[in-house]
Image 1 (tube, helix red, strand yellow):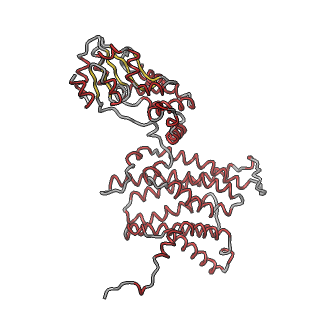
Image 2: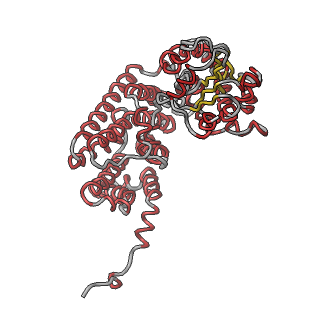
Length: 504
């Protein structure tokens, strides 16, 4: 009785559990949990981690987590109780080959993550009835159990189609329905989950034990996804990918480059792909920057989510994704030359010059290698030297695209204004006071720089067409829109010097 009370309120130690197993009578049933117990991982998560292609599997799981269809179920089936069942059900129906892949992977997992301590204790008492009990799913569990080095007398798990019903009823109901109440009341139960308290309360010897080697690993938690580190670890909660890359950098490239192309829509599409390709590599620099800071700085500035995502980065996969994005980007860019001028988008695929595409791909990979090398040097030198390299990194974000396409003088001026304004901001951050960054109107600086350089070029060349130009007007409107709050703040803070208090 004291062991039962202890198990329901506190954890049982591993040595005590081993002693209970080894001293059990031969007629005693030992009900052993699977997940994080005799199998030191979670079977459901590992099954979902088997989805192939993995990026599509990740997208499906992410979509399900966003939609939460388990909350659409009626009554007692609604909510978290049906979450894993619905994820397994939908994933298996959409990725049916996973069932076959799981047979092969289950063997590897069972060999790698079987609880050898528990298995050895169970095998020392060969006359006992070892019954695997779990709220995992039968077709997943049986594939694992047959590769664990122990002979289970029975496997009690949730059914595939009726999984919501089984999980709602709970493990105690499933075990009692299968074995009968008499056998359950005389049994030993070993589990790591307090959700099993109804079962623990009914058995003769309950053992609630947390195994030190056990680890709950979410499905796809090790998968590299482009821009995930940027969004979740480097700039968490700031929607950086949307605001800074798509609505800022991409828009700048479109009005500077696509505007002057004969097929601006197609060109803008190509810029989208190339921006994604560029940032796959640029993101590696951010990851490296945080790792270097963690290793060498006394008080590194790292987000709370850094540790969670730092190991999800794969250098070779980043380059692979970069190439995957670059290929359609460069093909669409080449299409801008062969699409008919009447905007009907009629063209012949044979008209695409593959040599030109491959040449541009070589140039593009070349600039990405230069970006990566520059960022590497930037991350490994002192912070004062970084100021000068930062200028180059910002220049690559815009002028780097000129290795595959072209702009005009107005677009070049916009690039210059963007690079210098960002460089000034970094100068202030490194040399003056980082607190000043809150008040530094860098978007206003871009607007002023662009206007100043345009006027300077007009006066220097006596060519007013640069100023009286739709592209120039759109750029000015865009820059003014981004700087609107900074402009209003500057205006609101204007006052006469006579109102300033002076010391006598």
